[in-house]
Amino acid sequence: MGTDRNPYENFTHNVDEAAQQMGLDRVAYEFVKYPERQLKVSIPVEMDDGTVRLFEGYRVQHSTLRGPCKGGVRFHTSVCEDEVQALAGLTTLQCALVNIPYGGAYGGVNVDVNEISHRERCRLTRRYTAMILPFIGPNEDIPAPDMNTDEEIMGWIMDTYSMMKGHAVQGIVTGKPLDLGGSQGMEEAPAQGLTFVAREVLKRLKKPVDLTTAAVLGLGKVGSSVARLMYIAGIRIMAVGDITGALYCRSGLHIPGVLEHLAQGGTLDNYQEDGVQHISIEELLRLECDILVPAAVECQIHEKNVQEIGARIIIEGANCPVTWKADAVLREKGVLVVPDILANAGGMIVSYFEWVQNIQTLVWDGDEVSRMLRQIILKAFDDVWTKAQEDHITLRQSAYALALERVCRAKKIRGIFP
Image (cartoon, rainbow, N blue to C red; front, side):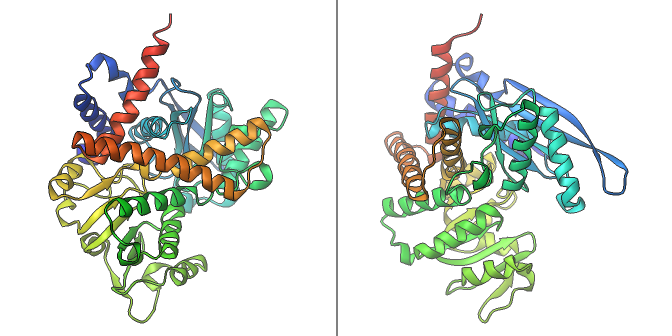
């Protein structure tokens, strides 16, 4: 993987840039570029046919300076050391930016989930949990869903951990089913947070919502919810895309119909509706619109395609969807980029709410969760926007600087043991 599309290289570059912007001495921030500890595990799984396959898994704990580690678990063929290191580091900065008492962690298994059965996925999850069990705990490291993992898998992790401890431990994971201590509002939290941010951007730019156009790349858990919530808010969604293709309609797609088609097992490449055109992902990225939401995998916008980007605003729904080289070009083009550690922080914020409810035996309703989510993420947005305006820097530079300052301050206060 080349440097431009290596997520860990992108993470460290952005940290260095923010530190230089702040005038930090390298000794004061160098630790942020490296995880505190990392675990690589071999996971033997008995397959349905009786054979045994060996899978490779990871859990990286980036920082415990500001609280327990927190971060996702993904099942995907992209999972590797560089990826989970980058995601763990980004999560530390995200938690610091929105000012919740966590540090970052991340993990996953290198597996194609389409090639294994439901029972094999269960056995893989439980064995992975057993292998990382010495690392995790409700006061040490709390996993959460990510790519190709969901509330069912979080339930399996919780059950496996609880069986090892001899009693139910709800606070070991977030993103669980409601019946196991999950939180209201968790499923849509990333998209809801991003939509709050999108509306605030439009407000600051004095752009009417009903005159705003958008395109969404990636229709997984986050992207599909973003498209639906933006559609409800009155934003005209002109295009959506995923690995099966992309759709375009100048007057706006009927998002409920598209999502219903996908829910029934259809794909974008076989969706049919009057006035809707099938286009390529490259054409979607070139589309002239107000907002582009990249909500799929990392490094979707890179040095080879950035010149063709037609959107005026990019709101990052995925982790690290814009490489550092592409980010510099977008800056020159005058494209406003709302960085991932701010835009997609909704999931982390509501994960924190779920954890608090678990460890304090509380239950909050959906309206209360939504109210608190909006309050926290818009406070973080205001901090980032204000600093960017005052210092004449980008929103990414501002967000990284604010987060880095909080992490470095915690390090200075705690000192070095022994």
